[in-house]
Image (cartoon, rainbow, N blue to C red):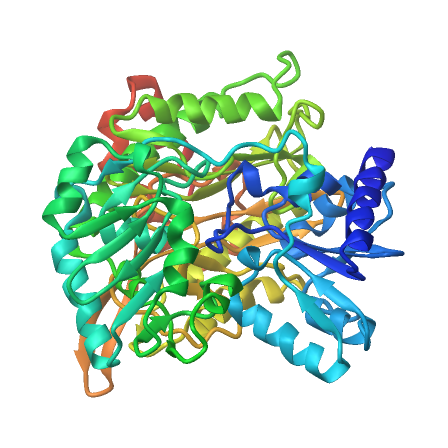
Amino acid sequence: MKNLVDEKIKQIRYFMKENKITTYMITLSDFHNSEYPCEYFKGIEYISGFTGSSGTLIIDMNSSYLWTDGRYFIQCENEISGSEIKMMKMAIEGYPSTFEFIEKNLKEGDVFGFDGRMVSFEDYKKFLEISKRNKFEIKMDLDILEKIWKDRPELPKKPAFLLEEKFSGESFGEKIKKIRKIMEEKEVDIHILSTLDDIAWLLNLRGDDIKYNPFVMSYLVILKDKVLLFADNFKFSNEIKEYFNKNSIVLYEYFKFYNYLKDIDENKKILLDYNNVNSLIVKNLNKNIVIINSKNPTILLKAIKNSIELENTRNCHIKDGIAITKFMYWLKNQNFEEKDIKELDAVEMVEKYRREQKGYLGNNFSTISAYGKNSAMMHYLPSEKSNDRLRNGSFLLVDSGGHYYEGSTDITRTFAIGKVSEEMKKHYTYVLKSLISLSKLKFPKGTTCGNLDTVARSVIWNLGFDYRCATGHGVGYLGGVHEEPNVLRGKSQVVMEKNMVTTIEPGIYLENKYGIRLENEVISKKIFENEYGEYLDFETITLVPFDSDAIIYEYLDESEKEWLKKYNDKIINKIGNCLEIEEKEWLKKTICKF
């Protein structure tokens, strides 16, 4: 592995030298700033072997560095071990950010290179400011991966499909009116949209171009009288093309987008989001065009779900609850000392039970099945090589999600395999307490996602622990599993609005020992209004029991026990009659232990 990685880096340096580049950057992204790019864009994995979903690789003539976030520190260290690449821990004291690294290491006469289609314009602006101070050049039109990656996968060619209004709850016509109203308020002529989840939501169009993400590789240009869609023509049936004609959506070939940008009249005023368009998009526009940099209006519009989306989402969680509860019944009734059951067997069974549900369209991310010390790696993915056997005495952490026509799910449960220690049970119970503390909170309108993060995290702090990820995130409707803006992170000033779907997923992770994460989805809703204003709380929509074998009930106070009892009753009422007789009887016994 070491020799392969270092040989690929050597090849990159050859082309760097040929193009007079002193430092080259590769990002784990695509032309659309997607969280999970398709195989064509996974250059970091191809070069380094690192399989996480967050990464930036910077290579100079002597060294190479890979930045990733706290979810992947352990995993990254393992996967790049033995190569020349040094891991850089994002947001950790003592490790520079990519911007700080470039500031410190590039000087006058140097050339910093990257593929401008893979770097947001907001990030490019920061690099540009550094280059002006340090007097180095930026070259943003070189894709070195294209030169060394001989068996690079093709761009996807999967067909698209329309999401019926009975699922979306709102027509394209209604949605585009809202966008054009915002454009009118901002006095712009054109809105450029390149994020795939926003395009999918706005057009009520879904596809299969990115594994686990139901999107179509495309760009969108919204004008006052029509919409221009840049995507591969062959992905659309005659029915979809008729839908386009009816709604004044004009179809152009995918790669003609950048040529179109160059031809836009310099007198036009354009709305776009510097954080969510790549740097080459802006660089291709006439320099005299007035640009209004603002968050894509679609981000908030799609995060606040309409009544049909909410009802559908509740229904898809009934299906998902049935599937995962059946999996739990299967798991808790195995003899792990006699049977050779491994992490990938758990993945297979989760997917088996989901496939039995009507309207199931597939996973919305690769299922995490992590036993023992593997569960301490937040986003560990089992492989044939790492596939650990389940044995009595530790935890199995399973984080999975499904796409249905009625919405998308994201759930994590940690299971005790056989008897686990009192310390492990205590930690499990405190993670449960953390989840309950936020789930039962009542809070005034205007409360930020950062405030909500602290409510859950403070329970874990009481044990002297923390976790290096957000407490939760928005979930798209048959969209991205991680959806902005409702991300429960400490510094977030985003206000939690009514009718957002958000996860709550605190955890405790002890390196080389075990990890615990419990995750439910909730809907934020108004509960009352008084002289202090509106108050909201959360409706829990995930319907899967927690593992009573891992709970020490004495650690729960009365309000927590009351919440848990109501939650268990809801599970019985919603999914009990959809289970086999023996599964339902087991469910009643396993959730009624206090």
